[in-house]
Amino acid sequence: MKISKVLSIGVSFLALTGSVWAQFGQVNPASLRKPRPRVIATSDGEVDDRCSMVRFLLYANEFEIEGLIHSSSRFHWLGNTWSGVEWINSQIDQYARVYPHLRENADGYPTPDELHDKVYVGNIDNVGSMDKDSPGSDHIVQVLLDDKPGPVYLQAWGGTNTIARALWKIQHEHPDQVEKVNKKAIVYIILDQDSTFREYIEPNWPKLQVIGSFRQFAVLAYSWGNLIPYPQKAFFERPWMEGNITVNHGALTSAYEPLNGAFRSEGDSPSYMYEIEVGLRSLENPSYGGWGGRFVEEKPGVTNVWKDSEDDGDLFKPIWRWAEAFQNDFAARADWSVKSYREANHPPIPRLAGPMDVEVEPGQTLNLDLSGSGDPDSDKLNFKWWEYREASTYKGKVAITDAGSAVATARIPADAKHGDTMHIIGEVTDSGRPALTRYVRVIAKVR
Image (cartoon, rainbow, N blue to C red):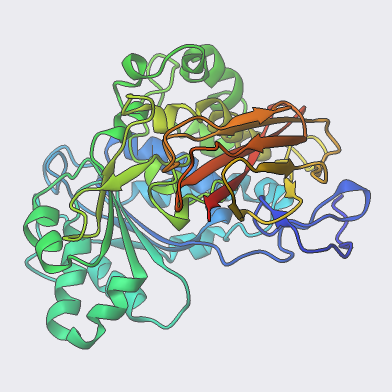
């Protein structure tokens, strides 16, 4: 049984959003929780969308889900390889069967009825159809024009046409709200699956932040076997998938559609993995990188569109470098579907001594301290510090001493210039099964 009495703590960074120390090492995830990202997912219902939705629902407590909308793409539309408009509700019915266990393991899971109420049919008649309103597009308009705080992440698992219709309606019927929507909406596109983004959204909404996983998503799509290196590849093959996800893990994961027992495709999962709060701070800037990829401005000063960026010369490494961690996290969520809180594993809680953003001098020694970290299941913790060089603007190397310890030091290079930044990642991994990882990101900026 979770103990809800929370100890008073000092000012510190809690990488597991909303978690705090509590008596006997237990946590109350609802305490001090930041507002969850507001998300709307639009989907064309392809098999990889259906697989992505299984994972999405296991993480439903991490988001404020505002809409699950059937849309179209150049691959799927009404009457053409079409999965219908009932599959999302069907998966929510499967979610309902494991909901009591999920709710026991973490706070914030929406009820099945709440999720059913968020399902809408968008613009599905044809490829790029945005010539008329739909219940889905009207719902997007309603959400974007409301007064609730926080950004709204519009995920395009298929084409952007339903999102485009909503933006068109705001532009033409609510022109006084355009600046509000520019600041409020963030679009995350997988592949770009119809013409409405380039032909309508980009030229008419140049200030709107758009994150385009135009190619990087493929590392979790059908060609994953050619793009993920060993040893990460083992976390997608049949023995791991059947041992951790698809067999004996409840009704929801039984809806997953593997290929010969192995991972099939979740090309759309990066669109919401980007918004799962694990401590990497990726929502602060697309160039920081996280589970959903890393991005660079496509046309600096012209539009607010961000495209895939490489890590170490590899376009797909910004996602696969985290594969062991996010697949183990997926496995833990599958366990939550069938296990009690005592039986399951839960993420560790990094606590950084000091600020996440620090000003430094060339040649300075920077102290890095995660010794106050803990674990809700009282598991032993392992630590790792490393520099995320591709996210840093300083292009040299930062030397880290005691990188495998809770307390380490980083030497700021003597040739670092004013304004240079260095991103130092601290990983905290527990000894539970599956082993779970959370992070802190320290950004050092040269004065």
